Amino acid sequence: MTLSKRLLLTAGFAAAFAGSAFAQTTTATPPAATAPAAAGTRFITVSSTTSTQDSGLFGHILPLFKAKTGIEVRVVSQGTGQALDTGRRGDADVVFVHAKAQEEKFVADGFGLERKAVMYNDFVLIGPKSDPAGIAGTKDIAAALLKIQEKGAAFVSRGDKSGTHAAELNLWKVAGVDLDAKKGSWYREIGQGMGAALNTAGGMSGYVLADRGTWISFKNRGDLAIAVEGDRRLFNQYGVMAVNPAKHPHVKINDGQAFVTWLTGPEGQKAIADYKIDGQQLFFPNASQAGA
Amino acid sequence: MDLTAIFQAAFALVVGLDPAFLAIVSLSLRVTLSAVLIAGLIGLPLGAALALARFRGRSVVIVILNALMGLPPVVAGLIVFLMLSRSGPLGSLGLLFTPTAMIVAQVLLVLPIVIALTRQTVEDLWAEYRDHLRSVGLEGMRAIPTLLFDGRFALATALLAGFGRASAEVGAVLIVGGNIAGYTRTMTTTITLETSKGDLPLALGLGLVLITLTLAINAVAFGASRIGARYAG
View (cartoon, rainbow over the protein chains, first blue to last red):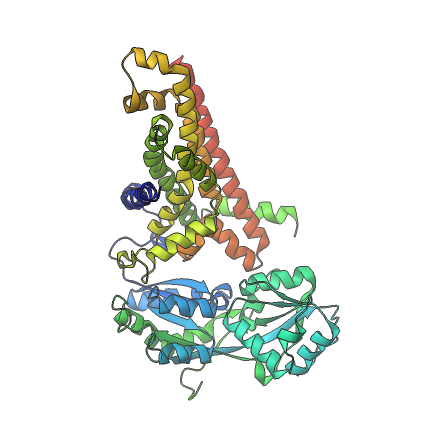
């Protein structure tokens, strides 16, 4: 059985490669603007977060980078933890995420070259307009979270090791809530992206921590509104780093580094600042700020 | 969200002929049809051979193949992902996050369906025509082409079942393709993405387009088999 199955698998792979070559030659060429890359196209793969993708930032800045350098950027968006894993396995050339401690560990472990600050936005606590925890309009995120826990109001957690998830867990700690002890039916981990978490919070009238970029671009708000914002502890910093070719010799270090340089240089920074939805700026470039 | 918004979104997609949308549809069709074609080329002869062959452990193989028809797409995706990752055994091919990887994953999903349904069809045909085929000297594996030809309408349905499974799944292509805009974004992964962005009318509009396409392909296949049946007498 194992032998015949292995044969089957091998045959499948071999045929699939042949088949896709066939498919490529027989498919009519789609319009140039969105054409899947033909062989020989210069591209890099960037693993990034759901917030940069769901907020539409990449759709705005990547065409500018391509026009300037001719390098196509293929973005795989995952939670920050997963995006770093993708870089660790060598499946991406550049990692662009938001969890500084994890990024620094990634570099210290030798998987990434120098980490550079790119931009920031902030987190906001979203909740139902009925406000069961009575925290709407307050500014102290720690006090607000404590109230949610005390009242047992529904809270939706990303639960996916993303940057937002890491920030949320950290805020519970700051609030002095021991989640392991206090976790109950009120605390709902969904293990999905930012948009899905917002959809879920809307569906069950729960609170949820979101990055402001995704919130501004989110279209299915329904009964949700910002409950808490403006606390300094809600700061959300993004960083970028090229995957270390010493760990993965196949990574495209030159083109990857070109992207890092552009993103943290004047043109990339301006492109980020220019991205607005309904007149609201979503991300604030700060590559030149020391220690960001 | 009302029904009109959904139909408006679907209508705007189709009428607008937005190049990004067309690229998504054409990639979806390219990936799924390639997977069905490959699974057909491998699965039809293999299924027929399995129908006629007698060996120890045959029933075990049949049961496993039948069970694999229910292989969760996300598991198929994970297997291919681990094989093709740079840190996996086939990493040097650099195929992760490409349409080829998506085709490989979908072949894994479609192949068990084609093999299992082909085996059943051919086994039934063989039981019915065994004496006749033997009398004209077609025995064992030499009977396979004839049996496949005789069963072509039932086998077309097997391929359509495979197409349905591949075109509807999102778990496998999402994992191995990475849902990269303009490169590995298919209809189902776009629906997932738009749902997470909260753009539900657009997501459902896309769903409507996908269902319509599937319907059209099945209608064409049905029409072709009707015409074929008439000429075959």
